[in-house]
Image (cartoon, rainbow, N blue to C red; front, side, top):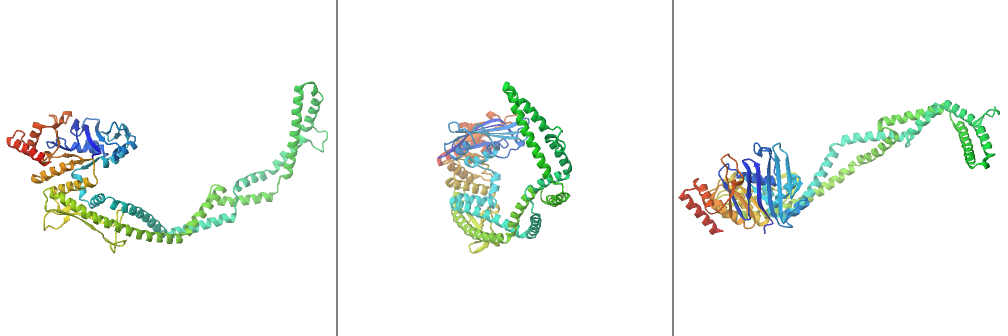
Length: 580
């Protein structure tokens, strides 16, 4: 059951298209038109909806921006619906709206279900919605890496499960090997770093600094440096408060406050307000006595010994030597010492670490050997099935004698992993080099499809691959752009038939110039330019009845009114209906 369908696209100011609506339906839709009419803009538009690169050159000259809007019918619970809802999109009764705007300045915006989203979200949805294939995709199929990806996709869990374990072990091995190389290649630098740390730690340990000691010594040095002034000030203040024993008649603050207090005490019973002042006067007398006592004790404790000052300055000089090298203050110096000790422990443990890493590397390499072998076995088994299925499809595409096979091989590498009893090179995807081979006819050697397939053969191989994929890993919608390039005659008819078969389980949209292919379509769309060279809203029309016969006639003979071409077109349509 198809889980999503591309129902409609509206394209504005994109390339030669001014404003056009492309109405699609389930099944097989063929898009036809004159060369240069803008058929490939359908592919380009869908590419933008699926997160493709925004090229400002696509914006029609004179327009501020190109806009593509797409409406997808998506079944509830389908992967695309789930991912869209995770991104904040809203589905309106099973309809998902996607839009993409590209400004003439190159800015791009994307909206999904009425919500602005990063373009990357559209790209994430692409695999769940549409498989787009064009000439560039055929060229991609020529690359061995793409062929390996195709084989792995076909194999399914038989490859994906060991591959996930392999990838985890491979990443860990890379990290272990990198750390091991860093330790061994930088041994001299690390030894020098360790020596510097030892020197610094010994210097700090020899000085035995205490946290905050530099602040305490600075305060003491300030006090000792001004001892005489401090003693004189304390003595004068004490005398002012408590009096001078050698001058009993002299006035002092304590005596005056005491007299004032006694005067208030004698009359306090006559007025509560005065009584309160008398209490405060008593408190003041106590406070003056306490301060006078502390001043006396301060003067007694004050050390004016110049030898102590010299000792303090000497200690401060030693601590300053540390702060110049290891931190802005003693607390920072002590923090450096703690970090340095930890780093020295790490550096001194390099030998042990090297042994641990070497052992782990060996275990990981052995594990990778087992997993790489599992990948090779799974790929080899899947390759035989995949090649057989594609070969069978090619027989239905007018290549009855062609044979497709996969070469799954490895390269010798003394530093690699063990696969099949040999030590071979390995990488992030395993140890296998996968290449798709084609023998187009009996007696012909199997050669890489890049060298052994013509353009038309490559198109059919690619279509056969997609038909095989449709049975194992279906995609809701397939869009083929000129997949029939270089093909004609009977092969074109067979391509049309296989596309129609694919359309039984998925939506298929094909941009084609071949009437043999278009005749098999359930719906045919015609893209036409107006006299000013633009495709307008009315420039994309659904062809039915006589209009479809006329377009097929044009595609056959370049003449819409040729009776011979019309007869051939009607015959094509009848034949296609008879083979569905």
